[in-house]
Length: 480
Ligand code: BGP
Image (cartoon, rainbow, N blue to C red):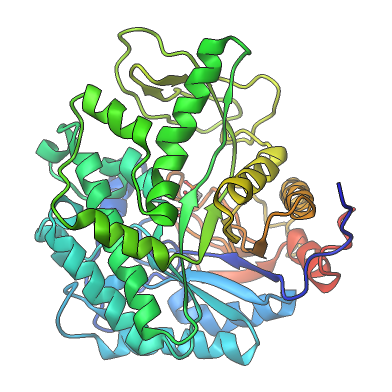
């Protein structure tokens, strides 16, 4: 293996956020509600976690946040556009102040030589779109294209890197947690796969739009990417791992990158009575979209381990949002395909998330070998309870260690030929977690608020802030 001491020239260093998790200003300056405003209000009422009304108030702190990112030396920043901020009703009249906010943010980034990487959709459908049926109707394809056209026209002269959808596989597998859907849809086992087909069509239309409207625009999508390892060398476990990789990873990559559906997954869905409807012409659109797909965004946090499924076991999604180290994880089951289990060879975070840097190397090399496509790390990070000390410092050596080991893994993959163009870990600054409120922090910048008290959202630099700045300054040479 070649040894590389630093990262390729032009490699971008930055971090990520998503709109509903950090902006706040949920009903300010003409923005209307999106489904995350509603979902997180329900979560707040049930568990007491913060809702979306303020989160970490990036809407009012964006200049300060960008200045801090610039101080760390960022050359890229991945964020999402809050659809209901620019188009409050999903389609139709734009909201001038919302449109202006993203112009201001992008201009601020560019004035600091930070490349904006824009996610079109990070879980936050406008409620007006939800009320028209959301991902449950074909009409969403046109609405998504409308939104994509609108933002490409508006920001296309300033933004080169575009991501259509965040973590489609997570959205499909946790469809009721990521979307405001009806009980009927929730208990219809086919619903998620039909919605996935509409997402693929919406994504393809947006990809085509990016190539049509954005000079030198590049299209990607960010997928949650965990490699599935077999629990043992029993051929049944190896088969289960192969099935899980096809079902959870290839099914999404094949649609984006090759414009086809993975044959073994389609056969499985047919066998299980879960097959979705494909109308005439749909596969041509998906194929055309794949020709406009330039890079794959990778959100990597952990690897997964699976074994042969218990005969007759019902479908179950993985839940690891119980608080406490190693606490109460329930493993995922996909009937007749695979069953999740503990990987005893690796450790975990305080939130029961397995830590496996080599899994990142595996994923990057595997994708490069099989799909020959550039990748961009769009998320990777360590969620923890950080403590603001009385002297204003935050010591987060666990985060530094996690990120350092993952950067090393990325470096090893690059040495083996993977074309990785950027590292944008989660998250630039603290924000609202999707599952554990404000207390679970990922940022390089601490935001002083709790789930109960928004305080002033004052920003503080964590120890990892200074460490990451040094990594960026040395272009990854200084990792020890
Ligand atoms: C990813 C999402 C992010 C983010 C992250 C951490 O799946 O794209 O939105 O929040 O996970 O997850 P959590 O906030 O649940 O710890």
